[in-house]
Length: 351
Image (cartoon, rainbow, N blue to C red):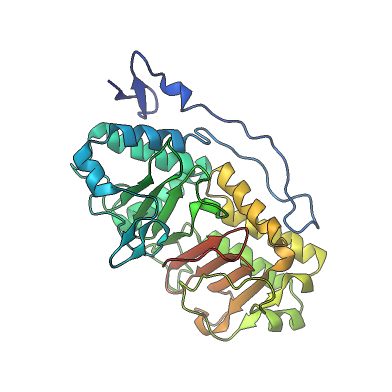
């Protein structure tokens, strides 16, 4: 029997069993430090930050699946390509506020051990430096982790393709062990934050994701007057419009190829900031997908003038987009970010 027990120092749960050592699936995987140049114009892309628990999430998903009772599996486990009557292909759906299944993580539907496994999965896919920030977001938006979030498991972990989807208000996260062909993160994800003070008088005070917008605005400030005019777009699209345009389609905003080398390097820092909250393997997958479609040089950047809180040209809404790369940031009135990244554009979005 496998029983989770509190760690004597951290309070985290550990596994005690005669025939299974939790250290076998909660090892720290060291990812070699290195740099990745998304455009081929700079070697200072990002620093490796594997953190504890790197690449452990999939093993814990398997363990959770094996610990579920048949009556639990009937409610939260599905075939890989399960079609929901109202929501379509359930595994690939993404939204700003939804529950993929009815039971909340902290409900009595799950045992104490199972709830801890789900928390361990969550912590394994978030970079250690961002764990406190994400927990703050969940506290502000949903009363804390597990209160209203839910999960579903698609496929059978350890027997082919599988994916765990975790959803809630301002959250869609995935763990797939690279089961999902061509897609970073296992499919489209969503994050957001409605901090207590986000209106213009306090400029998004307390919003954990506002630093990403400030990084993007730094790129805008480096642009010449002519480049800024190219980058400014008059109308913000529907925020969930993150389907891929594909190669050969004209994108809004300023093409990255119109930027100077120092501007591109600053944009690379923005990309680094965007992927920073996630585990190293997911970061690397994003970069790999982006490189296959031409890197940042194949992308365009837009700053939307119709939702400028305060009319100060500190852009609240902006978008970084490539043939099969969309990072759509809506900061007015609070942060909603839709992310869809693949290595080719034929992958369909189910929103």
